[in-house]
Image 1: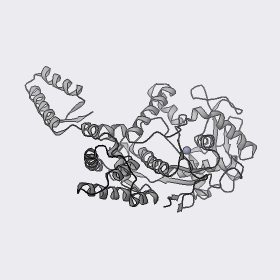
Image 2: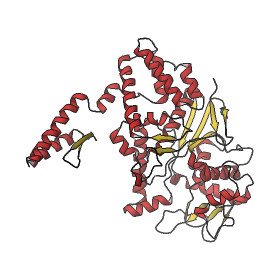
Image 3: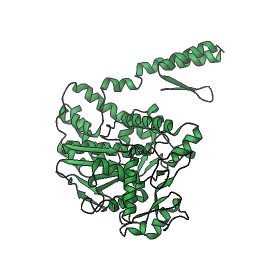
Image 4: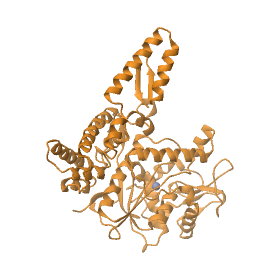
Length: 454
Ligand SMILES: [Zn+2]
């Protein structure tokens, strides 16, 4: 059984062959740590986590690298806005990101490089680009990649000259030799983070970090590069340009990475996610309402290249579905994992067809419910998807049980009655008691009170 993946660079599904037998290197662009991640950011996390699990089941030596962008102008602006230091903002945001990723059932990547730990590698990369005639430094401290210096520019993203210029417009400036040129290094002042460089005190542009860090941790020629579809242009096109121009042809691959994988867009409640529509969900707030595995399951129910409509209703359904899987796991007690069945594996091997794999998983579950089926194979299938991974008892305790629910309802009613009778001391005591048990109350207009687990 061959693993087939859709390669964005070639725009077709191809058989995957690692560069070195049994050894796979994968690099996925991670977050810019200026704010909490939203559910759209969670999609590549979960998709590439499943891919890494599948790869590990096939090859003995897999290195999964997922970077953290901790120097970027959005970070500077946000730190200023919040009146905290850049370091405090990036440290707390990165820690919350890692916690969210684990709550979504993602295994930690093997290497999680940070941009600010790789400034010397970036400086080296930029110096080589200048030396080879692909970049130029200006007196004001900017260094730019010169797009016309590389005739293959635009091929990867399939962007013609007009689109290249439009895409680079955010950075259009009088100092550019060509309107499509992009920034490798820019000058910093006392308000912005910076490092000494041959071109003055400054900081890197966004794209250069991924070229420098992938080369450092995986080599100039590696297997899979992934990210969201929105990164194809300009970010990944610029990575391809930088890396292909820096490394000699003999040591690198024509496409830079051999296989490029991109997950599709995510909508929320049927529309483009936006704060003004009220459908902008951070992972942290969704985790207050739903278990991480329910969010994970919603993200896996749509094929990764298709657009996905994320809704809270789907999270509720996913939670119920997982309850069913956990009941089976609970009944199986100590059955060890064996091998996932062929039809289940075949679905994942076909460009990570998770909706089909889930259908196969449910067939296994219904066989088990009927008293036939293979418990070890079911466990192995769950493990490949990263589902039903917790202790079933912990899972069922995660949401309040029915008995608890009735008791909480009664306490909430008692509090409402106390409030009506202006017995605020009792009302507050009940609120505090519930709070101590991790139950949050929300008073709604009209005297109704809703409760949820914090
Ligand atoms: Zn990147």
